[in-house]
Length: 283
Image 1: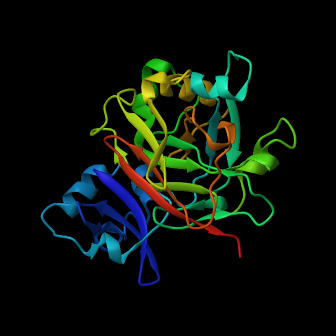
Image 2: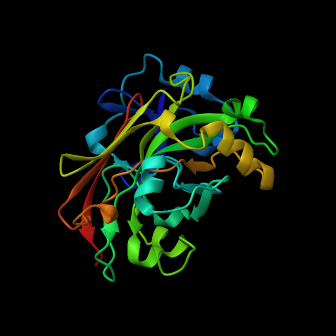
Image 3: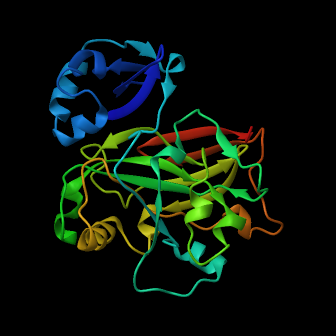
């Protein structure tokens, strides 16, 4: 099942994405589950399937505004340097533990919405990634049990402002400019993706493939990340783990390639879908 958050007619809602349409779950079961986050918290996927079954689309996808899959997650934990080819191209040392940094909800945009190149930088870079959405809360989660805590998977573009990222050894400034993190188009539930290591991640800029890797090439896989993160803080329903980008980022190309106004960037993960965003200049 593909679950999405959207806005239509000025009203925020959520629903099931069909091939070209949207079934509005907010209108059907919103009294009990008003948001996608509340649906995840209530483990109400069966209720969502029942509400959507045989009902037909309420809207065409072209007639809604996609929002970030979870518009305001409690936590967005991003993983850096989690593919060996990306670690090598950055010249970073091998580490026994994952590099981590936070993103904040108000820097995100949804599928089809514009990613914003900051006015104070010309080094706006793409980073295609797979996002993991937590379903079952937990602390000290074992690797053996980790995937049981996942609600689903999505695509993410961890748009990075490289000069600000490099001001210090902490990544936070370059990762939290307004409108630079794209999340969508929807979340695919785990019953449709039993093995998150069997996917292919591809990033395209203006139709040209810039990054491509299999998710089994992660240095720290999803169960390890969940175990490690939950060892120091509680994971909650709707929390998002952005699992890292492969090699081929624009900043390390010769010559470098950065996103600019008028570009279109796509992040595709097999079995999930394709996140597409235009790029505009900050106003």
